[in-house]
Length: 266
Length: 265
Image: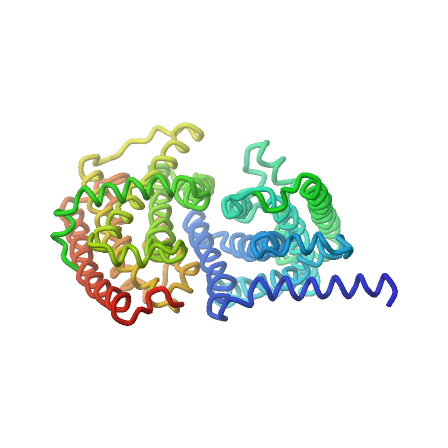
């Protein structure tokens, strides 16, 4: 088997096993409660709040924003736990003891969550259409699908970085929740970014989701793929930036942990 | 479950509450749930509701505070017995002479008191960061309502905790129970926006009556008879909760002492 094939095999094995390890202990009902009902309830809360704020004139704005934001459940929580899970399960020393390609191991942790997150957004949009009257009649659906996948990918990039931070801190739940909820403000899911203070707009622009949500709104309003293409390229760039930052942090963490013998001391 | 024990063992209640507070303030998730999450929700709501006019800032402070109160009740009080199982101290607590309900009551008291911080943090945020001048329209009635609401939340927590430990199938829905209560109880928008069939569900939940009375006495001149009605509903639900909790504790202690299945998942 040549190196390329071995690495692909490693990527796939890591992808499947880390995902199964994360959810195998759960019963389907727990998965449903955490990954389907909780995000939907959150979406409905902000949609109702938004409808109340605008007297029902901008419901679509909130449905689209919050449906796309649901990808952060997989992108932030799922990916972080997949990366950090190795320390919790005590498998980190074995992982760092292998000669396996770190790049493949690391990015393999996020792959299933891109699929999982995409499905979550599609479910949310479906509920938006059925219960909230979201009109997709003018929408380029393949372009919207591509936008959702790219947005989920970029959010998983941030998740990979957060996963590495979870190897350095004991307060994983605090950090994850803080980032997840902050995205509700900064991503433009619930507040038009142009109405935020300037410093908040600057933060919004370096986060994943922001462009994905904006692009989705444009597509639902009748825009075409070429209209949102620049936003999508930026979104991919942001996802790659966070993913690579996470990878370098992961590599640094491994070096430091091996040199200092501090692999599981946090 | 003998509620006179709460008076007989009042010092134990306070000691348990103190210990709980000390322990929980070192937990990142608890700090997030009672301080940061309500603040983020408050920031969002302030941006979203700013064109509503009137006393929306105080409305947001109270509403986001209630979200912290409910999240704390659900995740911290709901797991106040479970956490003893996770740390391996449940059998010792059940086996010692101090009544178990006294300990759980003390823990819930601490949880509800500390979750009032969510209202304080939202108030500070609105006053300091957003520069609002916040005043309560009926301060005396507001603080009495707050006291009754705390009691109602503690009693509600007493029913949730034994359910979560005995019926894992219910506890599995915990993550999905947070936002629906924000919606159905009208913490940040009126329940009139919701489909009509949800209204009876709202009426059956003590947090709805707490939200109604707290909003009514903080941002509007709620007529006294309506305030009294909300208080009465909270007290009635609290008494019902205490009766239900009493039965649940009996079943739980039976399982602990006779079936020996308390620590078995």
